Image (cartoon, rainbow, N blue to C red; front, side):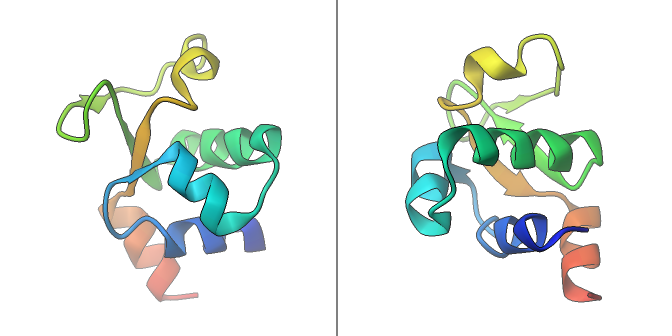
Length: 85
């Protein structure tokens, strides 16, 4: 797990919108999107769209279109890896 991924998991103990992550991490939009993509591919986070109660399965082909509108939450595996680092 990279340092940016660890820092993102730090912010994802609760469902958090992309814009809030952008403000809290200070990462550029493109980098934040790629970090989230990496965490989703590893199964360390979950995405929610169009509302914070509807989990959206990760689809590589459509992720770019909804990435900035979605919210995110650490998965159980993500929390475990975050807490054992």
